[in-house]
Amino acid sequence: FRKYYPNVQIQVPSPFAGSVGAQELVQSKLDFVFVSRELRPDDIKDFKAIFGYPPLSVPVSGGSYRHYGFLDTVSFIVNKQNPIETLSFAQLDGIFSTTHYRGASALTTWGQLGLTGEWADKPIHLYGIKPWNGYEEFIRQRVLSTPGQRGEWRDDITFDKVVFPIAGRIAVDRYGIGYTGVAYVDSAVKMLAVSGDEAGPYYSATYENVARAAYPLTRLIYFNTNKSPDKPLNLALQEFLRFILSREGQQIILDQGIFIPLRAGQASGSRSLLE
Image (tube, rainbow, N blue to C red):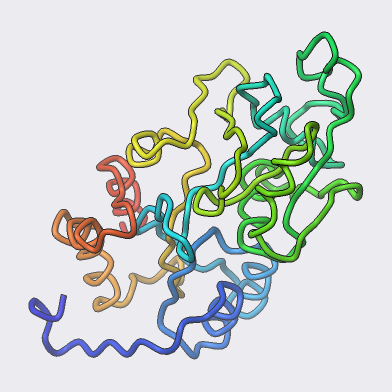
């Protein structure tokens, strides 16, 4: 970008946690902030309270696939002995939430998910990451929530403070289910295929499905900035965004070897947010 715009100065501070960066944007200490998830409702509420409109959030890159410590794909996992292979978002919402905004009733046994025989009356043991955490917030937003409605977790979930133990807990609990980053699947568990629609299609967290943005729990990196609805975006920021979303910009992301570039349709959708 500096090759094309040598007079534009970009200063990069130390990395922030997502909500810390969002607050820096609210306080006008930063011109923009990259966040590895959708902004939390509280972040948006704080911003709107000051400026009267929400921040502009533009997806600029896919996350990583299976890179420890980066923005890896999230997967729901069960014990290897569990015969279940697929779950819809509505079913997952029925399993993990008290709000059930996706329409399912409370699901507490494996038989309610279609398993028979010895599994029919067995309880579903829940594992997750204690709020607030990036993985937890991502699943809450993507699976438990619907537009204008924020999902709430059941109170009988076994919560860990961090992501690391989840796979190990599921590996030794025949009736367990939880979610984790793919990079942290370090035990013999089964990753489930999931779908946002009951009718499918269902996708598992393979590299191919993540790279082509078919897997519905693929993560994104967002560029967030302050843009008034009745004013154009600052020209330097606009050109910086256009560069990131260009073929050249996405190739740089690919060449880095950690993050996955946007698909053409995703990049086009992001560019439309600048118009």
